[in-house]
Image 1 (cartoon, rainbow, N blue to C red):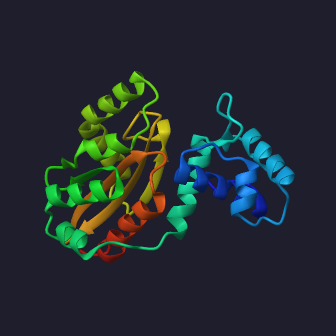
Image 2 (image 1 turned 90 degrees about the vertical axis):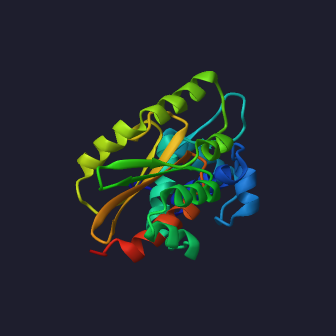
Length: 234
């Protein structure tokens, strides 16, 4: 859902999330002042960050001077990316998709994006999975419980994707879910981009499951690239 924020505040929120995704470090007003031109001084940027925290888009880690995105902040950023990102996909990945070479397709997609790629197909609603290692390598583990929650998600993916498949019907969509709002994963450390396609009349659903700090632009570009070329094929 698009926040009710003025344009400058929206720009600051967008920049704060992008900086945190890029660096993994809490974002303060001085860094934003140095890297972006909002037309205001650091003190005013600091007030904007405080206001965004009050509205639930940013959080302040214990003992940290800067801010980090909340799930609400990530969702804001990811949904903006869904609207603005350009389609971008390699010829080889498109070829593997068209050939339904799911092991090779999901392996390349997972490695390139640093996510766990999933494909659900209409023929018996089979769920194909990429390699979990690419997701594991890109997650920042803060506790053993986070590790256990990701493992549980992986173990329950087939049933959850089957439910999501039935709930979404035959709609053509591209959606993002952050943290525990996801119907596919339960871990607070994950985000999911899900997209629906038609390939020669067969329904196919792809999911990219990654850390909340995933590269949303690159991932969206791949999913949009597949969708723009194949979603209308019958």
